[in-house]
Image (tube, rainbow, N blue to C red):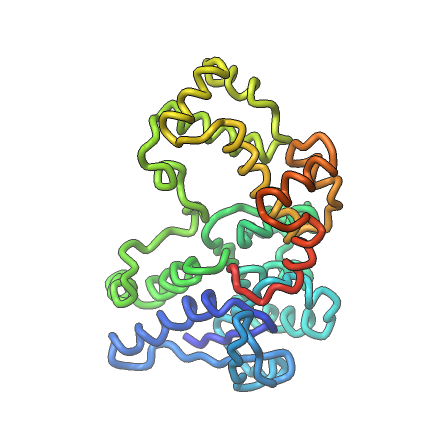
Amino acid sequence: MRFAFLLIPQFSMMSFAAAIEPLRAANRLAGRSLFQWELLSRDGAAVAASNGIVVAADLPLAKLRSADVVLACMGLEPLQCHADRVLHNQLRLLAARGARLGGISTAPFLLAEAGLLERKRCTVHWEYAERFRQRYPAIALVEELFVIDGQICTCSGGTAAMDMVLDFIRQDTSADLAASVAEQFIHPRIRAQGDPQRMGLRARYPTVSARLLRIIAQMEAAVLAGAPRLAEIAARNGVSLRHMERLFRLELNASPRTFYVKLRLDRSRVLLATTSASIFEVAMETGFKSASHFSHTYKRVFGVAPRQERTRASGNAIDRT
């Protein structure tokens, strides 16, 4: 099985390593070359990852003769190749030749721009899901670890790339070899493509009661739905505001208001970094009564104003995916 990794400048080193290392380990454990791979770039030149490490490419994408799987690896700038028609045509040509095309982390944006995700289910890193939906409303996006839909595979990035490649290994060789490779990387459970990207609430709040966990779940859902008032959330859970206050103080040593505002601010931070929504639009979407109130609260909690946050995010060289 022949893999080709297309490295886009500022790609996620974590995702790339999680995808390529299982292939190396599978060859080692099998005692023979089951998998081969080449590293590609747009022009054949070396490519810098988002952490600054430079990786040499074997050849330019245009000179790739054949591959069973071509995986594009990207990072923090999902639209940097949106106008690269030559690159899009090369990807479409590979798909026409029968190669499986994949996108890791934010690379599903590249596949979408190339027209390869029409009538396909796909996924992308959760931080960029809202931006993806806004730009491609007709594409069926799901927030799962990875999705294999016919000839197209997409992956949310990070360690999910390992789960996707382990699935390739299982399909192409055996479940036993895939499990052995997972054990080499202290990866105790091979996650399925339908698994969620984010950690469950119980894992994040292991000591809270079932009732408070339901309230927190309602709060998180509310943040995505326009952030209704706390009184509405309390009513939905059959408790008074005073009782909800006692639960939060007793179990989390925080007030419901402080907890809820932090959830809304975390959501706004993602929107600032990954969408083109205005400061006012972000404020309204996350339940603040005005842009000035939002900016004041944001700066008090994070130490920078929303506009500075957006500038910092666009120039940030730290890999978050």
